[in-house]
Image 1 (cartoon, one colour):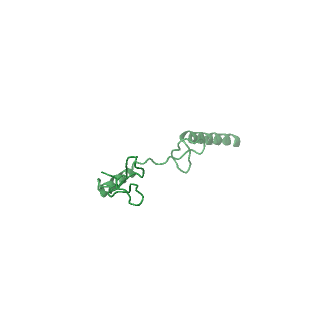
Image 2 (cartoon, rainbow, N blue to C red):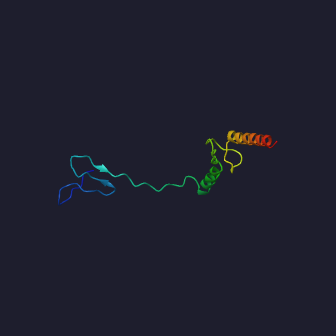
Image 3 (cartoon, rainbow, N blue to C red):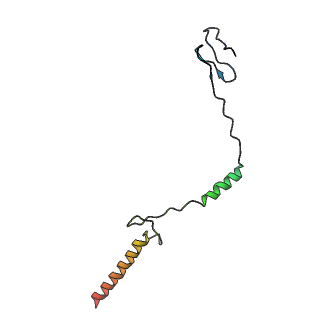
Length: 105
């Protein structure tokens, strides 16, 4: 395909069909990429919506951290203690109750 030259400048000019000719006659012509076609609907929208909805239930709930040692908290969410800190707290309460009972006697 011969290059079309501009009558006034003598330089190559753009051709129809998305092909641009280089401004320098010694370089090979440059091509513009074709315009992308609109995406085709491979998966039906209702099927895609159902798949997205099924993934919502698979998410792992956020784990609260222990307020003392920052391990994963368990049990009562108001307490925010892991099982180790909870058992230490309970045993400390028992020891405190025993000491108060001995002091009262």
